[in-house]
Amino acid sequence: MMGSESVSGSSRSPPQPAATKKYGVTKPISLAGPTEADLQRNVELEKVLINSGLYESKEETAKREDVLLCIDQIVKCWVKQLTRQRGYTDQMVEDANAVIFTFGSYRLGVHGPGADMDTLCVGPSYVNREEDFFIILHDILAEMEEVTELQPVPDAHVPVMKFKFQGISIDLLYASISLLVVPQDLDISNGSVLYNVDEQTVRSLNGCRVADQILKLVPNAEHFCTTLRCLKFWAKRRGVYSNVTGFLGGVNWALLVARVCQLYPNAVPSMLVSRFFRVYTQWRWPNPVMLCSIEEDDLGFTVWDPRKNPRDRTHQMPIITPAYPCMNSSYNVSTSTLRVMMDQFHHGNRTCEEIELNKAQWSALFGPYQFFVAYKNYLQIDIIAADADDLLAWKGWVESRLRQLTLKIERDTYGMLQCHPYPNEYVDMSKPCPHCAFFMGLQRKQGVIVQEGQQFDIRGTVDEFRQEVNMYMFWKPGMDIYVSHVRRKQIPAYVFPDGYKRPRTLRHTSQQAEKTPEVDAEGRGSQFTEGQHKRKHNAEMVDAKPDKPEKQASISPQRMGSVSAGIGEGVKSECLAARNVDSNSQDRSSGRPLESERGVRGG
View 1 (cartoon, rainbow, N blue to C red):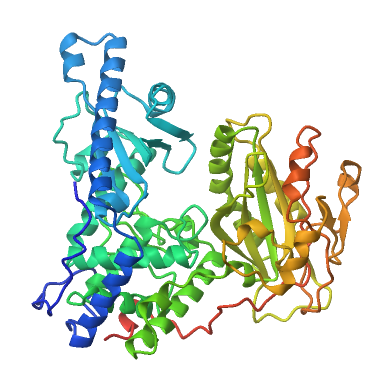
View 2 (cartoon, helix red, strand yellow; view 1 turned 30 degrees about the vertical axis):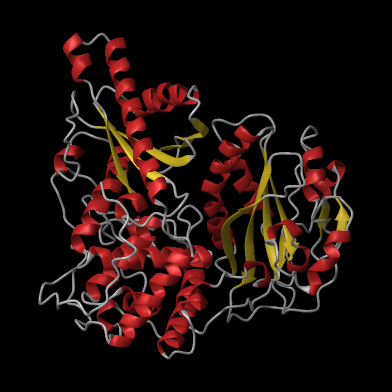
């Protein structure tokens, strides 16, 4: 099991050339090592990472190891209990076993304080996921004092059980392999573990298999880890770290960084960060990012191949996993989220160029993205439940479906209305009801001439989305979702961190009454009542007119008070009038001509 890399072991002298070994599917762009200036920038970069609190303490590292041992003992006892209940021999009960593996940031050595631990339990063929894992093991964990915030997500693309164990966040997957007894020294990288298993099991196993392959395919694991730690920090600060929302998650960023390490095998992290932005601002998506050639196998699992699989041709930003069966790890990326990430890549590239010219410090790269001043119009998605435990489960389900709202809006407006889903969740601490909120920025597609008065009607889109969300198999009374339109000046105060000075245009919202309004297509606010629900005609209409001065709408930042009051009555407000959608959000950049991997400018 791999721990985090040493923070004191930074490179102080140019590494010996990694020679002529070929990494990846193409030759390196450059074999150059660092200059003295690069080494100095590397020292400064590592200081920033340390000072930003990205490395955990020795005590937390030891606690994680203890937690892993506890979970390992729990699943071993669970499997032995099931083996005994099912009438197997005493010898089988004695030999019965389950093994815990880690993957993700912990396995790669790039986790930080408070980070969750991605874990996989591998069990025997007679212990299944649907009942044994999600019901019996779930109930065992639920009875333990050490376990809190237990949340099963059986319908996820990779089914997972989320919980905290002694305060450490755990994502636990399960894979039942075709063995009656799981050996303690199981080699999970061996393809034999994939015999006679279903695709969900393959996806569960491949988290560990991919992590192992990544570490084998990079020229320098230490430089890879430091660079990945840096880019993950950057992605979180810029609001583009979230696989479930349609951006990129940990494995995606790891694969992108690993490819840059292959292209610049002798570079130190300060160079690799700069080259990362240089490469991916020029990348010609949907050309795939691959660390190795895609391998076929006689096991018959589908591998990513747009020539054979029509669905693969629709992928916007293919980032291919290196372990069989090779898959696109970034299938969640949409046209809108790719656009947002490309904007951020350009922003990062410009900042790195300034750092290399000594016009900026590394801290400038990690400045937070000001999402709530970047657009004029937003969708606010409020999620409520009867109690905190219900909210945890309900929120996990809704968040996993938010990407569908983005895709549906893109589909129903033919890509003319662009969404920017923001991965952060927000809570109004002054409200008594358990709830949280997510936001999406809205703008019409840039560079397209629109007719005067053209509008996008997304009422049906939102209705379809809500109907799908409400099909949650663990739904309970009190679980509800509210989607509403808010303008930039109407953003509720609780989304802004302490010390952040709100723009002048936002101050009036704190004085508004606690009422849930309906916003019509003219941007006027009106009180929403149950009797008006069927009579609204202009809600969820997005006007594509050129921008004009906004009319003030009476929208309260304390809307949740009236929302929660309406739970018992079943009144659901879906006021989505979004007029004068801004086509000029902040932090945009003019796109450069994109180049394929071979054409990426080097050095």
